[in-house]
Length: 209
Image (tube, rainbow, N blue to C red):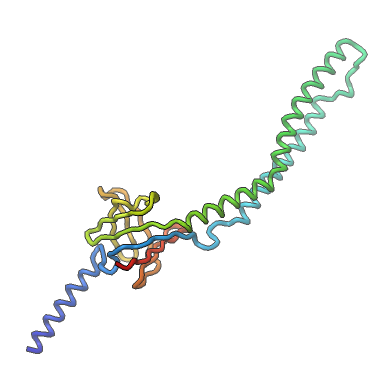
């Protein structure tokens, strides 16, 4: 009798083990709130500033060269303005130089905006990070492999998708099974799990039913 009970117990454990190791592990089935975060130091803001500064410095060098070439091209000092031809040449070159200087000065204005552009670029990165951190969506991972997304117009393609787990990889696919998005499972607890893709983390926190 005791041996029969032990055999039945082993069979039950074996069945449950097989269920948990399927493509949709039972412990991961359920409803989740998903939040997003960017990996620390994933975006090198110092490098962004330096690249913009370098670009503006190159622009500064080009502007100085253009001004020098302009002075040589439109040299007004060597023109004999006592003759009619000289006066016409002087007027034509002076007008041409004035128009060219307008273009160069516009470039100079852009160069002087370098620090402002750098600040705007960093602000844009910070703003994007803030939006990502404050975005939360509700997802249900069903036992049959379906994914349901609700409560947000930003579903990031999760709605009406399929899910499965292979080793340490979490795989989203469309209903046809053609398009796949593979994410690494970097952390898993009784309260949820974390997926990693490139420099972004997706934190799945299980909701109490």
